[in-house]
Image 1: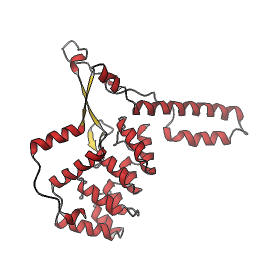
Image 2: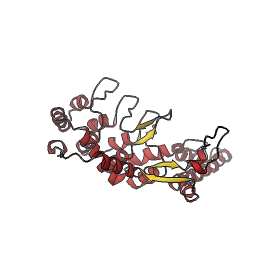
Image 3: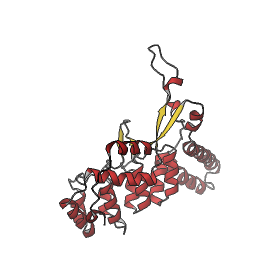
Image 4: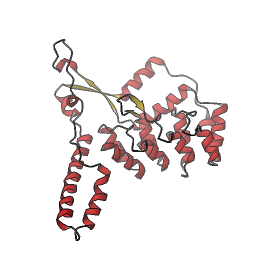
Length: 281
């Protein structure tokens, strides 16, 4: 599925592929069997640009359909992205830690053993991050500063859009309420018979078994090729959503999420206080 692809590209550090998937509607809060998101993998592997992209496009839904942020999600071990940032070995970990904190990551979230990111940094001997947390403890970033940092990241990387249906064009039920179907919002890709990330390993196994069990192995290979083609079609559907056609037909109006941020800023008025250099540098 597209969530698998998002995590794989976060591991590889492929920023263009992440952007294409997020533009197509991939859920950044999709998790694997261990509760890890693409942001977790991007942080752990030290890919700064991928972390910035996934943080800017953090809005998604959990398994129950609730709207959440990828910054808030914890793995089965209770690790947030910030926990992984302070415990990794990449040379970019301090930069990633600083970025996540300034974008509003929870500095006081605890893992399954009750450790905060600062405590985990100390346990791992990450002295640079420990020093950073000491500074933020004395002089924590304000809500305004976190908002500004996240806004800056979104101005640079935001590709998610908020969809608005023009309900005047939709049919209504007996009570006069508009009938909104799933297909009015997003295309429904055809389901795969096996998980996307299992296709290639199974193909390798089937190819190796051709001599021992030719007919069965060849049949398996044909099925896997079909699944691979279907998977490519699914990814194309995500990258080239039919929402564009719906918009042209007048059924849907698009509004870029950045417009909301600009409107809020204009209404609120920018705070005159600058950011503290002791936190940013």
